[in-house]
Amino acid sequence: MSTTLISPAELADRQRSDAQLDLIDVRTPAEYRAAHVEFARSLPLDELDPSRLMNSRNGRRDKPLYVICQSGSRGEMARNRFAQTGFANVINVEGGTQACIGAGLPIVRGKQAMSLERQVRIAAGSLVLLGIGLSLLVHPWLLGLSAFVGAGLVFAGVTDTCGMGMLLARMPWNRCAT
Image 1: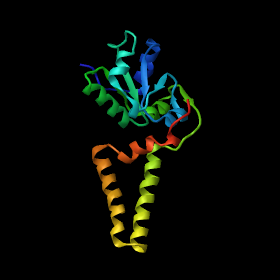
Image 2: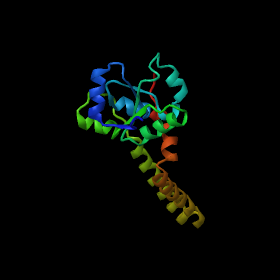
Image 3: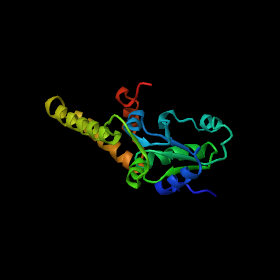
Image 4: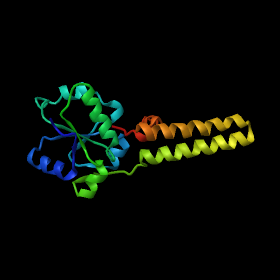
């Protein structure tokens, strides 16, 4: 049975011994453009099709596939998608790109982008303030907007699935022109 996590140092060792190692970065294109592991290729989580990817690996279907994100959680979501489709030999990079930077792996840096997590905090905070303001100025029931956002944040924390983050990931400023 294979492991589901690999440290950045172990990943670097494996890449040195296998130049064809497949590392898929599942972050948004803007996050990938800002900084990514040199030998990673971008395939955003919302575009991930496990069967198509595994079938396109040119005879390497049985070799391990490595997934990476910013800090590990989206990488684990991607790994779970592969497992649900019947592909068990998928390994998440522990700590994601941030850990790889800290471990000294070769990183390609480009145009900086605001992180998805920061965008979610700005949007959620703005909606809470809007709900409070509207409830004071228009109608008290509009406080429900703030309650809805708060409930969404609790749900995101409990399930590690953020609907607002998935929505923001699809916005034009989080996409890159090809």
